[in-house]
Length: 141
Image 1 (cartoon, helix red, strand yellow):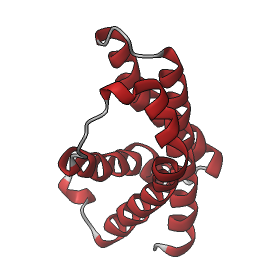
Image 2 (cartoon, helix red, strand yellow):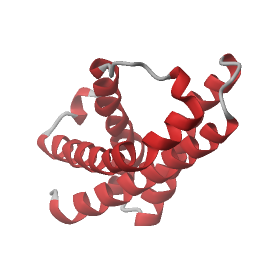
Image 3 (tube, one colour):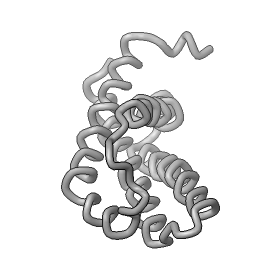
């Protein structure tokens, strides 16, 4: 079943989703979040950026959006609202998993960071889903 998903159309949808996610999150990570994260959890951040885990995230997250949100929206002829809502839920579940786990195991993890981060995950996944769905529906046949 999963191998049947590997085709030119889905690869194009994946690349669209990957590029969209990277562009939106790139703005967040370079212009908005550094001061917030440094203020609240600077004591937890690594001195040196680790590319492998970040790269793995940016390969897997858009794949998840494609499989669980964008393809179902396209295949079922659903509306953009379906993609937006499912994307928001995907962002909620994935970002909440990380942030609530941090709150459970890290004694000084700020609730404020969890709220900000989960809100960002919802916005990021929803916006990425809307853009990827719209682009794919119009341009990828």
